Structures are given as C-alpha cells and as structure tokens.
Amino acid sequence: MGTTANRGWPYPESTDYVADGATAMENLADAIDGSIGNGYTYVQTVYFTSSGSFTKASYPWLKAIRATVIGGGGGGGGAEYSGYVGHASSGGGGGSGGGCQKWITNIAGLAASETITIGSGGGGGSGSGSGSSGGSSSAFGMSPAGGGGGSGGTHTSGSQDVSGGSAGYAGTAGDINLSGQGGGWGLTHGATGTGGAGGSTPFGFGLGGALITTNPASPRGGNSASGYGSGGGGAVGAESVAASGAAGKVGLVIVELYA
Image (tube, rainbow, N blue to C red):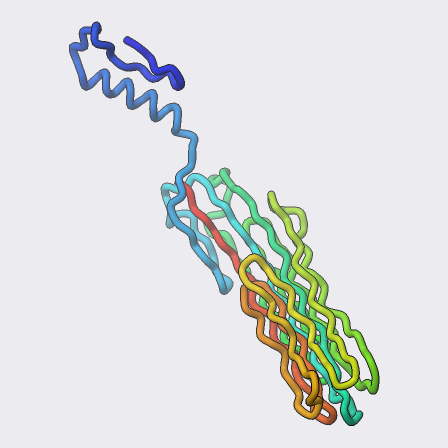
C-alpha cells in the first residue's frame, strides 16, 4: 500500500493485491475524514433586527458560530429658531453604535436559548433639545453601547458650533471590538446652517445633516439614518421656526452558522 505525500492517505498501488476493494475505499475515506474533520463549513446566516432569542436545538448540526453585534444609533440634535432675521441655528448629528464580533466553538456551553437584545435608535431632539442616545444591543456575552445623541442648536445671531453625539463604546467581550463613529458638528454662520451628519457603521451611513444656505426663513429637519446602528442627522432651524433632528437607526445582530 502507498500513502499520499501531503496527507498520508492510504491507497492501493498497482502491485498490491486487494481482495476487498470496499475495505480499501473505507480506509481511504476514514483517513480523509480524520484529516479534515475539525474544519467548519458555512451553512446559513440568521439576522436579528428586533429582540428575540437564538435556540441552538433548531440547528442540531451546529459546530461553530460567528456573531456580530451592533448597538443602536443616537438621534440628531434639534435646532431652535434663531430669533434673528437672516440667521439660522443647527443641531449636531447622532453618534453610531459600537460593534463586537466573536467566533464561538463551544456550542455545548451556550444556553439552550440565548437572549438577543436589539438596541433602539435614539429619538431626534426638538427645538433646542439634544437627541436621545441609542440603546445597547446584546448577544452571546457581547453588549456594545448605542451612540450618543447630538446636541441641540440654540438662539444665535452669529456663528455657533454644536457638538455631535458620542461614539458608542464597544467594550472588550468580542474577538473584535470597535467603537462607533461620533456624530458631526452642527455649524451655523449667519444665514448658513448645516446640521451635523450622523455617525456611520459598516452596515450603513449616517447621512449628512440638513442644510440651509441662503433661505433661513425655512427650517429643515435632520436627514434619517440609513443603516443599522447609524446616527440621525442634526436639524437646521429658521428665523422663527424650530426643526427636529432625525432618529437613529436600531442596532443589529448577525449570527453566522457553521457545521
């Protein structure tokens, strides 16, 4: 009998007398199975965009999981009316949620039903109010925080810079832990007002904030967050009318399953 050079798998050579071909094939199959039996094969992905549970008994073949968890995005800041002719006011953008990822092979150590919590998107601020922070998401021992809400813009007759929401903190529980992106500043200079952009995640951008350049008589609400965990845009208020920031987007949990 010979063996292959790389793996040492047995095979009958032309000079061998093989009385039982089935036995020879079985020996070869056992050798191949023993060599590659510790690998993992991707099967499917389960997405959670609302809270729920993961039941491992539903996947009796499960050998490994790659879980990704994203916190909710913060809301954009509102913008009070400026109170001055020819002037605007602007709110900051909401920060995006943090993110964690973990590779899990101890399937027996998982609970029969793992709780999945999806962080809510923070509400947009109204008037001079700041946006609300996004909620934390949690799954498989990871719990990245949501992004902070953007600050609200106030009465001004000149220039004003308003801070965006803080980046969501990821923590340290994953194999990979990445904080979110802070929201953009709301900028006002006379008749020009720009609401801060919401922070982005790998699953979608926080769009740029509202913009007024030459017509401060018309308010603009913040632009909506476009992807899971991203922050809402800040608003721009007019001379005599306030505007509201946009809400942040909910978080996300992705569970990739391997046999």
